[in-house]
Amino acid sequence: MWRSDRASRELGMRLDQVAPGHARLSLPVTNAMANGHGICHGGFIFALADSTMAFAANQSGDADVAQHASITFLRPVRVGETLVADAVERTRAGRSGIYDVRVSTDDGALVAEFRGHTRALRAEK
Image 1 (tube, rainbow, N blue to C red):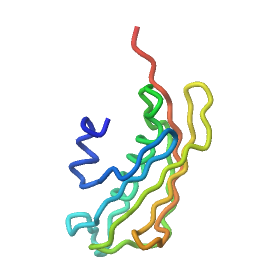
Image 2 (cartoon, rainbow, N blue to C red; image 1 turned 135 degrees about the vertical axis):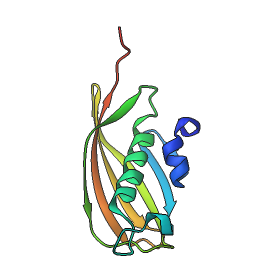
Image 3 (spheres, rainbow, N blue to C red; image 1 turned 120 degrees about the horizontal axis):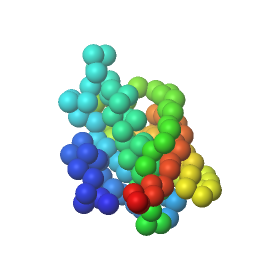
Image 4 (cartoon, rainbow, N blue to C red; image 1 turned 90 degrees about the vertical axis):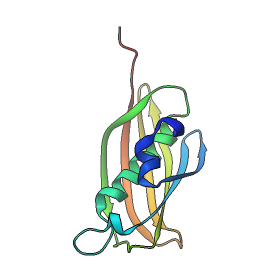
């Protein structure tokens, strides 16, 4: 999946760890990611959390996609910091899954909490 995920790779994300129901990605924050306040735009933090959930969810061979997600931002992130996202599967039931993603800086400061719901796609008939 990593080879096919141009969005994550071209945003600068790195796949650090992946296992069934778990993934860790990291993202160095660059000047191009700064918003008008000079801090990391929340959309990049959300994209990192979403991609991390995707790698945690797609270990079973099904094509799982995001169905719903929410994020709470807890502190600003400065250019030059590196974000680290850890996703953990909370439950899977049929075609649905729930994942929690903790986003922090590489020194462990909590940046955001993300909860995402996934849905396994079925082959078109």
